[in-house]
Each structure stands twice: as C-alpha cells, then as structure tokens.
Amino acid sequence: ILIIAAGTGEFEAGISKDGQTREHALLAYTLGVKQLIVAINKMDTTKWSEDRYQEIIKETSNFIKKVGYNPKHVPFVPISGFNGDNMIEASSNCPWYKGWEKETKSKATGKTLLEAIDAIDPPSRPTDKPLRLPLQDVYKIGGIGTVPVGRVETGIIKAGMVVTFAPAGVTTEVKSVEMHHEQLTEGVPGDNVGFNVKNVSVKEIRRGNVAGDSKNDPPKASESFNAQVIVLNHPGQVGAGYAPVLDCHTAHIACKFSELLEKIDRRTGKSVENSPKFIKSG
Image (tube, rainbow, N blue to C red; front, side):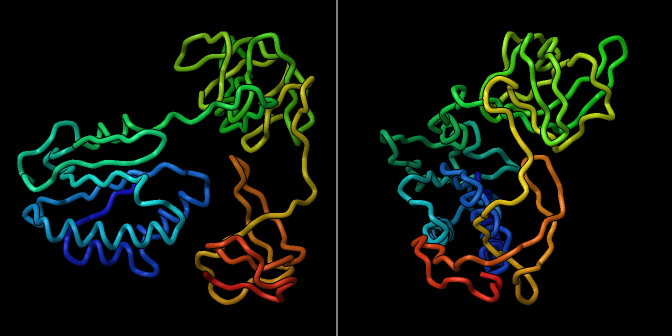
C-alpha cells in the first residue's frame, strides 16, 4: 500500500526526484511486489478537495506507470487516517468520490481501503519447490534447546524432516515446528515459524543461514552470481572493484563487483551498452 500525503508541498516533496514516495514505489516493483493500492491520506487537510485529489491521481498514475505498474490495476482511495474516513467505512465527507475500481483477472470495485485490501489476488504459495527458510534469529530456550526462527519462502517444513543449514554445513533433524506458540503439522510459504532442532548449539547456526531439506536440493553457498542492479542513489560512479555490503534475504555480507556485463534500459529491459566502464545513479 503506497500512502501518499495530500497536503500542499508534502505530495510534491514525496514524488520529487529524490522523494520517498517515488523511491518506495520503485523498490516495491523491483522487489517483485506486483499488486499496488494507492491511499491518498490527509485529505481532511485539503478540506476534501476533489481538484486536489484528481491532481494527485493524475501525477501519481504517471509516475507509477514509469516505474512499471499499470494504473488500471491500481485502486486509488482518498482517506484520512487521523479521522478514519474511507478506511473501514465509506465517508460522507467526499460526496464527489464514487469509489475505486481495478481491472485485473476480474473487475473489482469498492469504496474503502479495507475493501481494496480484500480485493487483492492471493499470491500463489510455492509449496512444490525445495524448502528455503532464511533464519531471522536463533534462540536458546530452556528445556527445549536450540530454536531457529524464520519465514518459509518456498517448500514445506515439518517435524521429522532432516534439514541442512547453508553455508554453515550443519545437518540435523527437526523435532517440532511452531507458529504463534502453537504446534504445526507443517510450515508453508509465508509462515513465520520457529522449529526445534536436535544436537545443534546456538553457536553453530545464525541469522542469514538458510535451512533446506537435506534430501531435496539443499541450499549451498555461492562464490559468485550475476545480479541485475538498479543504482537509485550513489555519489559518483560505480565500476568493477566496487565493494558494497549485500543484503540478501536475512544475510548481510560484504561483496565485490568483479565486472559490469551490460547496461540495460530500465523500461524496456533491452541492453543498451556492453561491458560499460562505469554506472551511475539512475
């Protein structure tokens, strides 16, 4: 949900070149978030001005289109978070507002932010893929033992399964799986679970490790990989030898750009230059 402030100056600052609204939309799209809701907040500060609302919708549609979203698939909802207008119940403060609509697999319409959330197409849960569970934390719980915690990204985790943690190279059996202090028969993608493992000390595994099924394509450490990178904001140029810190799932690790393979047009995905010497913001 992209929250936009309708206040004079606030909206303009958010969608300016270095504005946060623009950055958040680009980050969401780049990270694979394909369904968007735009909530135009603080409408009470504009005295529920229809002109201001239409101006914001026009500008926002243009910039989310540039990022990659189709505005026809996006509900726009005028709200006041402070007063609760159009959040859960339709507001009487904007008689000009006829409701939102979006055209995806089927056409959906509604008035409130809650209805727009309910109209999201549920994502498919990749239970058929090999287990990947990046660890967020590892706890030592008295009377139970070592309990790694994290979100199941793909596959299924259940008691009795033998799991391998990469890159630690530790293999062990899962004794039990819990979510919100309740035992689960299995954890599926999207579940934040804690699971108890046999004969592993807290020192052997840590945040950033990934758990997988030992018998089904377990995760392995990677020496190198090709990445598609967007330079949002960087003072100066980036070239081969640049050494940033990489955040990948829950891991936080230093890496190095060994070579730049090509420059790609962000909108078309087509290559515009092979083996560039440098890349810069934008």
